[in-house]
Image (cartoon, rainbow, N blue to C red):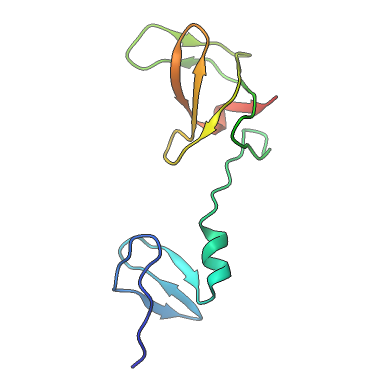
Length: 113
């Protein structure tokens, strides 16, 4: 019996092979056997509401009024946010908004300027 590789995401040893793909039952990650596919899978592409690819340092515009959780502040439509940083997680944009401060935004509520 051949030794199967550990999962590249969670390092689980319980991987199995199915139709040429390796599958991790713990985190549901799937990858092919070659190293190039694993490296390409690690790159996360973040897109705005219109499908444009976002990068660190971009300027975006808010397309919907967003309530700031825990306060009475609102980020209004048309607010320009400069020099964004892309991060992992549900809220994938980290930024500073004038008059509000540090915020995390979802990319689905912004468009690239």
